[in-house]
Structure formats: C-alpha cells, structure tokens
Amino acid sequence: MDAKQLQELMQGKIDDMPHKAHRVVAYLLSNMREASFRSIGEVADELRVSKAQLVRVARMLGFTGYAELKDALQSAILDQVNPAAMLVKSRDGEENLPHTILRMEHANLEDTWAQLDGDKSAQFCTMVQGAQTVYCVGWGISSLVAEHLFMRLRVMGVNGFLLKRGSLTLTEQVRAVRPEDLMVVCELPSYVVEVTESIRDCADRGVPVITLTDSPAAPTCRFASLHLFASAGSPTFGSSIVGPLFLVNVLTSLLALSLGDAAHQAMEAQATFLHDTRIFHPIFGLKY
Image 1 (cartoon, helix red, strand yellow):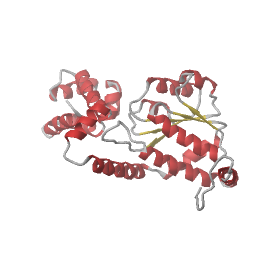
Image 2 (cartoon, one colour; image 1 turned 135 degrees about the horizontal axis):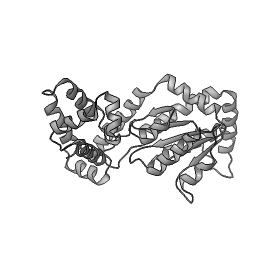
Image 3 (cartoon, rainbow, N blue to C red; image 1 turned 30 degrees about the vertical axis):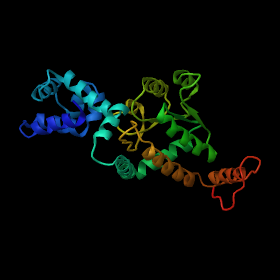
Image 4 (cartoon, helix red, strand yellow; image 1 turned 180 degrees about the horizontal axis):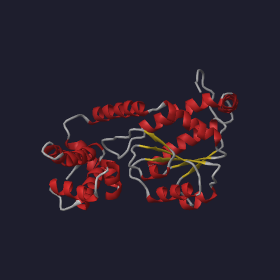
C-alpha cells in the first residue's frame, strides 16, 4: 500500500468515525511521517489518548493492530524516498518529468520560505555567535548541505568544522565536542542511525544542538533546542537539496549582518584571495 492508497483509506473512513477516532485519523493524515517514526506511546501522549484507543482506530481502518498500521505508514514513507519506486512513478506519470521537477522545486522554495521564522533565525545567529566551535554534521546527501553551511561559516571567519562519515565514524569524531561548542546537524531522508546516536551522545554531554531537516519526524529533532525546517520533495532521487541550500543561504546571510565588522573583514580577506591569479583565472567582469 503506497502513501496515496493509505491516505485514501483513511479519508474514506474518517467521516464515519466517533470524535476521538476522527481526531486520531486526522493526526495521521497530517503527520504521516512523524507518526511512522514515533512509538505508540509517543503518539498517544501527543494526542492525549490511550494506547488502546490507537489500537481500536487501527482496527477500524482494517489493520490487525497499531503495529500493522505503523508498518503501513513506514512503508508508505519509505516509498516516498525510494529512488527506484519514485522513478517508476515518474515514468508512469502523465506530467512531463522536467516540468514536474520544476514545479516541485518551486514548491520546495515556497514551502521553505513559508516555514522561515524570524525569531528562530535570530536564535540561530545568537547560538552560532555564542559557540566556541560550530560543528556541521551530515551524512550522504545531507552532508552537501552541511558542507555548504561549513563553507559559509569559514568565509565569515567563524570557527567551524565539517563532520561526515570518512576514515572515522561520526561516533569517533564527536568525542572531541564540548558543551561550549554547537552542533548543527543537517538530516534529510533516509535518516541515519549513526547520526542520531552521535547527536544524542553530544546532547547528553550538554552540547547545544540545532537541526536543519525536512520534518519533525527526523530522530535528531528529539535532541535539539532549535529546529529549522526546509522542504526537500523530489520526484526521483529521494531528497532535493534546493530548499535546504536556500535555507542555509538565508541563515548565513542574516548571520553575516549580525556579525557586522568581523564578517566584513573576513569577507574582504576572502575577496583578496579570490583575486589571487596564482590560483584563479582573471576574468573580466567576474563577480564574487
């Protein structure tokens, strides 16, 4: 059962359900990804209902119990980030694929923009400025977003480091992180166990954490004091990074303004470096 079929199943039954069951199904429809990653106890606490109520709702939907419903939710979500399944859907779809991608990337930007919060952006700047060292963490495609953030921080003179899977595991790399530092974790589906465990280890030691992700369902969100969200929908390759890169662009631009003279001096040094003809070809009219 794919996500569309599961949604149609719930939508077809919700109107005939009693109030509490109606509220549960409405939550599942609006928060499929979050519900698929949360335990039955966490969902029950969120909705202020009993676990038995969730089991009853699952049976009303035709499942043997909540565990089977959760399996269906997880399968539906995994299909949304499965490149092979997404390619089949794109091939069978009526819309021209490039137009689909264009439409979805516009939607990613608009949705990311809609989720931007002035208070959270200001808090991001405050936390970065107050940290001794900023660690940008990512795995797989998420590491591209983390690296973009790391590069921007370095250009502004902020003491930052990039942590991603390499010769050392993330578990080994985060041992050096201290409570006076800051972890900024970029996490797009599929969510990685090692990233979650590394962030949990840092949070347990008192290290502040910022998450930049596509959904509150990301397991790292449980350990963060600041959550930043970007839309990352894609019809083919799992997650798009257009929305997350846009968010990093906005946040680091605001940070540059917040840093004032310090950022200005760092960027002047960067401009001088970029005009070093021993490294870069001199091109008339090139803008840096």
